[in-house]
Amino acid sequence: MSHSQSSETLLLPASPDNIERAAALLRAGEIVALPTETVYGLGGDATNPQAVAAIYAAKERPSFNPLIAHYPDMASASLHGDFNPAALKLAQAFWPGPLTLVVPRKSGCPVSDLASAGLDSIAIRVPAHPVARALLAAAGRPIAAPSANRSGRISPTTAAHVMGDLAGRIAAIVDGGPTQVGLESTIVACIDDEVRLLRPGGTPREAIEAVLGRPLVAHEPAEAHVDASDAPLAPGMLTSHYAPRAGVRLHAMRIEPGEAALLFGPTAPEGLGHAVAALNLSENGDLGEAAAHLFQYLRQLDASGAASIAVQPVPEIGLGEAINDRLRRAAAPRP
Ligand code: TXA
Ligand code: MG
Image (cartoon, rainbow, N blue to C red; front, side, top):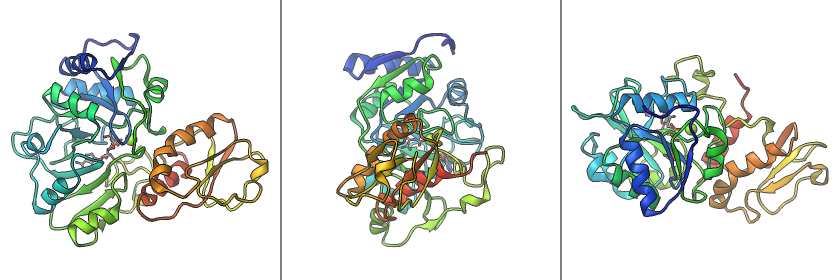
């Protein structure tokens, strides 16, 4: 790792030349933030333990929490992961796209043990974003990439968010504009005969279940691991996460004086006139639009200085499951 903490972080607009430049930095073991269709990722060479350690250091992430390895396509992914019939079906249906598959590691898989936190499984994602795909193809190796925020903070959906959290800590940020999906990938484990939902995300549960022809099995309850000092059973499923500075109050039917309001749908809640600031995730109740706005709006309302953000109810269907998951984490007691 030649990059020093005090160096400046390059902001690289996503031109072909800059993608080559970013790929060269990644091959040299540097840490580069990259756009995906879900959120910006903090990329490093997954086969290089020093690069993986530098990701954990930049994020201040507890190192028991394993990282997703990103590949340009199924052909490269299937060299390192063992895809059972269910995993194959899901990969064919949803890749490239916002779905991560946790599968057994193949023997000889060069992904560093540090990236998978010593597990004998590997989380694999083939993103759809054209800049991510071009960068992965140019890098020629799997890229480990957690969301490009400091641990516990709101995930970044623009290059400016990444700069705000990580400037001076990483070599470069490839700017591909705002991300389209706005929520992290759905994570599904295909390890044994069951297909388990580890994290709801950008691919709705209903779409996955329709392809499988059966329901997804639930992951371990999140209550089992409440703080960052405990080794979680399902890694990464820490209760408090995505935490804005302000408190977050869910299922708000009215806005109290001094609160900021995060709205959903056409119906204004009582007391909206008192709000310090108000943003509507989607005025016509479109969950895709709401997902794309969620993290940006949480940041903006947090910046209003309000002590509390009141959130109107969002239905628990389609992308609403992932939106509500992130909102519950934002509202959870802080460790
Ligand atoms: O959309 C996304 O998934 C983004 C973009 C950048 O690709 N990435 C992302 O990564 O959200 P991260 O590190 O914030 O979340 C990865 C999750 C963590 O909760 C981690 O515990 C889980 O994946 N994970 C990784 N490897 C795993 C494994 N072998 N078994 C179970 N969970 C795993
Ligand atoms: Mg994250």
